[in-house]
Structure formats: structure tokens, C-alpha cells
Image 1 (tube, one colour):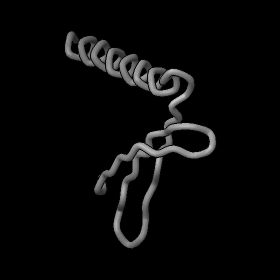
Image 2 (cartoon, rainbow, N blue to C red):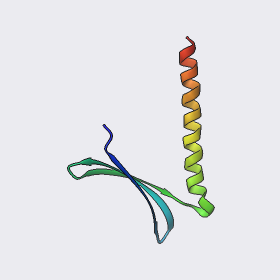
Image 3 (cartoon, rainbow, N blue to C red):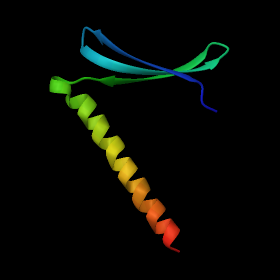
Image 4 (cartoon, one colour):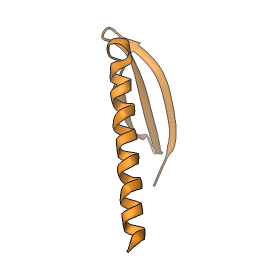
Length: 67
């Protein structure tokens, strides 16, 4: 079950970050924090990992649909 989503750009003493929040109701929530890193390297690494995952899923689906 997917709850309501919120994202926000924040900063603290360690630099910038993106916080991704998911709210489930009744006070339940989870958050993922992605650090900015030097010259956005943290965000770029996450982006590349998501891209790699999507490419692997595409290959998996293509293989699955062949047989």
C-alpha cells in the first residue's frame, strides 16, 4: 500500500539533501534522505543507480516476454 508522498530540498550543517517522505496515516511515516555531496555527486550517484535498475528491469521484462 502506498501512502501520500512529499519531497523537499533541505540543508543542515553537513550540506544539502533531498528528503523523500511517505505518510501512511495514524502517525506512521518513513523517510529517505539523499545527500547532495560535492557538486551534486550524491544525487548523481542515486540517479545513476535508479537508471541502472530501470535498464535491468527492461532487460528482464524483454527476456521474460520472449519465452
